[in-house]
Image (cartoon, rainbow, N blue to C red; front, top):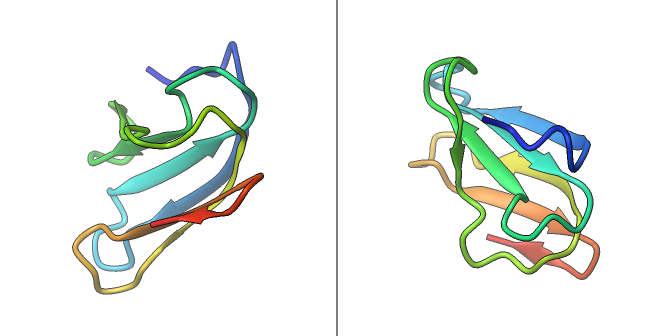
Length: 80
């Protein structure tokens, strides 16, 4: 599930080819809870925060027509 008890959703994006693929970012300092993905329109969520620092994730962009390439904007920079 999503860590909505420890952080707020800051942004949402989806796959331009398959809108069932949804990605969200979270604010706050809950370690390892920065980016989550759903591949079934939000019914189930997978934590894909691996490798991101414990800082707020502010925004996310899906690279159109890509195999799930994402850009995540944080307080210190952009991660790809």
